[in-house]
Image 1 (cartoon, rainbow, N blue to C red):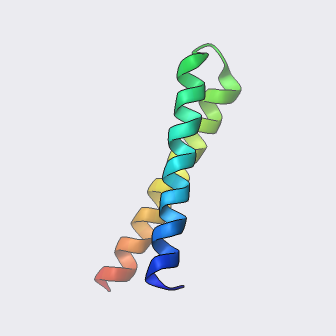
Image 2 (cartoon, helix red, strand yellow):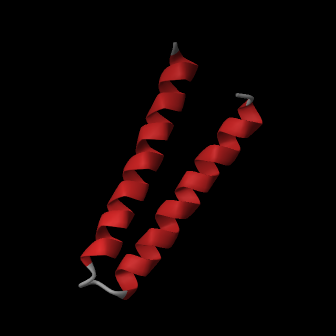
Length: 57
């Protein structure tokens, strides 16, 4: 993966996390939206950590 592809993928994951957060905040009692938000945030965090490990090593 090129550096640009990594940046694009990370930006996509962050945008997804933001969108699911907006949806979950709009309907606080909706467990499905809350879980989707949690998963999106976890994916973005995991990808960011993988990128950092790759850069450091």
